[in-house]
Length: 223
Length: 223
DNA sequence: TACAAACTGTCATGCCATGACAGCTGTCGT
DNA sequence: ACGACAGCTGTCATGGCATGACAGTTTGTA
Image (cartoon, rainbow over all chains, first blue to last red):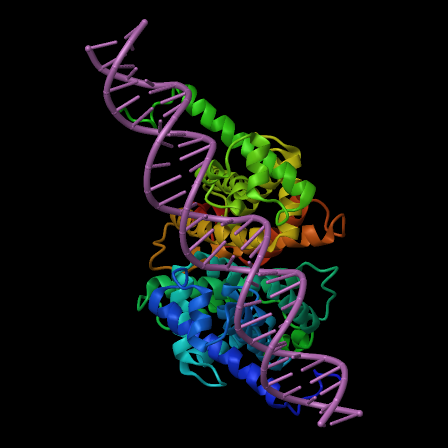
């Protein structure tokens, strides 16, 4: 047996697996939107793709896990965008722009993101509490990764310093709150999701501005 | 049939119900700590109190719901303490003190809080992801209430102004982050939970300080 | 082609959660 | 004190989620 992870020249088996996985996700979202998350059974999803229920659980650990794949991609993109921001940028500003870029990608559909699926995700979250709970937990776990990225940018050790954790939490809650207000407001007073995120982070920026290590000197000059 | 909620002179039936409920909570925590949350079945809990499993679900909506009762009390106390803080105090400072008071109560056992159960809750959260997910969701829901209390103190309308939501999210994440670092650190670099909360909120206070409406004038004098 | 590995379906199991129904217990009016 | 009634509980049944075991099939490789 050779190493499979490196064996990127995928064969038919791997292609079929990816196809099955993607079909399951697609079918699941369609039925969730149609009937609601809780009213949808795993068997229905599996039948729609013509596989057994047992196979479904070989691709996804739980019914919630299907919709979380999308969130996983969002957060991966968020971290990538954050690390790609110019080093001189203040930490919170970099987080803000990363969040806005992700939201914008979700809303417009660039970078392989599907706006329809994004809206579906929103609807599912609103109606099913178990999905919301799993989503929150997932986001909470990823906060640890964000904290490490922030610590690297601030040039401090996350084991000693509480600040990167606090900043990560702030960014996390900034996004969460924006999402909440956006969902509840509907087409309300706050505008699109990227707009709400911009507002929330601007409020935070006005108050907090831990400089990055690289920007410590530069920021003094620019003001 | 008379109004039961006001009928505070509780009869035997109500007393028995409360006793059963409390016994279920106690037995559940004991078995959870002993065997772990996931490895414990509802039937075991019910058997320990000598009721049927069906009765368990008449007291608690789910297995997670048992451990969330404790968190419910914590959050109720938090809101009460926040609203009891002097009106002149800045918002975030008031939130900080409320959080510290709750943490202190949990750690020392005043106000009817049981430190042993508090530690048990921590252990259960660490080991069971479903409980953590439910806990996060519950906390997220309560954030809305906190935001309204903050808005009242700031003298603004929560439907128009994003700031109370942001502040509530900040406080929420401050506590959550403190709890995370405290759990992970164990007897680590940050000290007791109330100490970690104090540190986290102090970091926030140094940056953010939306004044309360009442303190707007007074704060200018005191400095 | 033959073998090994991986994938799938079927069957079985255990637990969570809920509805329906009958029996028991307390509460209250007379 | 007693009977009617409301509420609580147990039993039974159901359905869905999630997982383990095993055999059959497909795929990649020697």
